Length: 397
Image 1: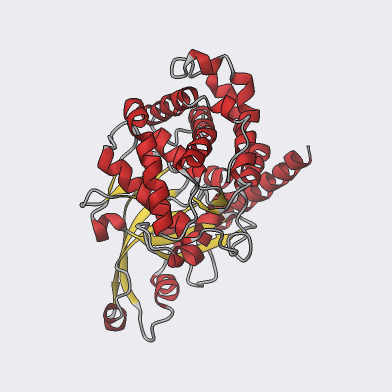
Image 2: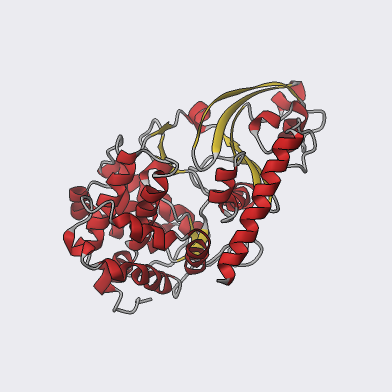
C-alpha cells in the first residue's frame, strides 16, 4: 500500500509537470544545466555547451534533426556542423538523441528510474568499458519532472549499424558467440566493482524487480497476460502459472548471493545491433542494475536464439562464456555451476515479454510478432531447462 501511494504521488507530480510544460510552451533551451523536454527545444548553444564544453572556441554552427522512432522513449538522429575549432578537435557530427517528451514516456521509463539510469550509464559508466555500445556524449535527467535527454554516437551513421527484432533477425552460431563475448566483456570489466553499489548507486537485480513490481505491477501484469498468450506457452508451464511470480523472485534471490557485476537486464534481440563485420553489440542501457552474470546470459540466449538452436548450442555457449569471462578479468564459475545458474535465470525474459504484450494492448511499444516470438522462446526455455524445479538447489559459488 505504501508503494502504491508513493506511485500515485509520483504520477500526479509528473502529470502536473508535463501539463504545465504544454501550457507554458516548450521554449528553446540554451542552458546546459537544463534538460530539454523534447528534441525540438534543442539549440546550437545547448549542443555546443553539452558536446563541446571542454574545447575552447568550439561552436555548433548548424544542426538538423533526422529520422527516428517513438516507443518507450522518443529517438531522433541529429547531424551537426562545427566551426574549425570543433572540427579540428574531432567533436561528434552524428549524434542520436533519446528523450521522454510525453506523459506515457515518463510513466514508463521516468517514474521507474529507467531514463535516469541510462543517463547515468552513458555519462559515467560507459567510459570505463571496452565494449561495442555507442559512445556516450551527454546524459541529462531531471528527477522531479522525469525529463531526460541522452545523446550518444549515431552508430548507424558512424559504424554502419543495422537493427532488427526477433521476427526479422536470425542469430546464427557466429552471432551467438559474438553476443557471448560482449556479455563477458562488460561483466568482466566491472566484476565486483565497488562503484556499482557505491558512487553509481545501482539497484541489485532483486530490488530492481521489486521496485518495478510495486510501481507498475510488472509481475501481476505478466501473469494476467498469460491468459492472452496460451497459444505461445507450453501446457506444462501454463499448468504451473501460479508458481511463476514467486519463481521469478526466488531466481533473483539466488542471483544476488554470488559475485556481482553490471547487468544490462534487457538483452532481448531488439536491443542488439549488427556491425558490417557481423558482430552483435548492445544498446538501450536504461534497465541497468547489479547482480549475477547469469541473468543477462540466460535472458540473451533464451530470447535471441530459435528454440532448436538454443537447445543445440547452449552448453557450448556457456563454456565459451566461462572462458571469455576469465580472459577479461572476471572470476568464472565452473561449467557445471554456470549451467545451474543459467537454468535458474530463465524467468526475467519471460516476465518482461508477457508484461510487454499486456502493455501493447494499450500502447504498442514493440511489434506483436517480436513480442510473441520472445514469449514463445523464453517459455519453452523454462520448460526445457526445468527452471522452476532448479530453484530448489542452492547456487554454487
